[in-house]
Length: 309
Image (cartoon, rainbow, N blue to C red):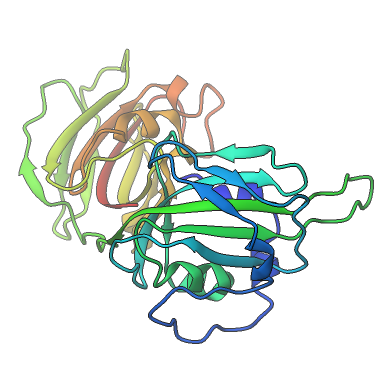
């Protein structure tokens, strides 16, 4: 998941965390800040895949973070702990030029959890209670020039709520149909604690990435931009030495699939939640000739995909 708000607005969490713990969310979206500055704002809806037409009196300047539902949708209200799928158009408040437009791409997921409620209460409270189909205006104060950095204008974000869904809890273990892998790959057996153990005896060095289902899950399909919750174990193909294991740490790991080795990004994209996947990763899709710590050369992983968001 791209953290678009953080990319566009460095320091947003700092700005919005100063107000202390928020009150319990109201049943409708809560506006905050100098919302009168949005009185001149007019939107022309161009559908879910095209940014709206936007008119407003320029320059737009606010001195505090400001948010308001400016066009109400007709869907169900967004609830706490759901994921809101949103598209964002970010504009320069001084001249109206486009800074970022995500409408043509995949929606951005925004999880309305306790972390967001604590860190960015005004964003949390604006989305909770907003109806699906609504458009929100969010204005972030500009910053004066400092330490050689140029001044930053007020930024205006127009955010459309496309859908909302409950967060699916992560599985405790893989669930699905067993798959018999072809011969010649590393083999995997569970020990008496249900932890997978990898044997590399007789396995040849890979000429390409191998991503072999051992259990085929029936959950959501993984996208390369997703954040995964997994259990995993990794060994070196030569010698079979274990170099990492979330099982040994006693809890699953969560990470964006864009932030791991290429062998994981390429090998797990397209797999499904509930799957157990054997990855045989050539060194050029891992840590190269130099390796990283005890992980050296071609690597072998077993990855249990327990959740995705």
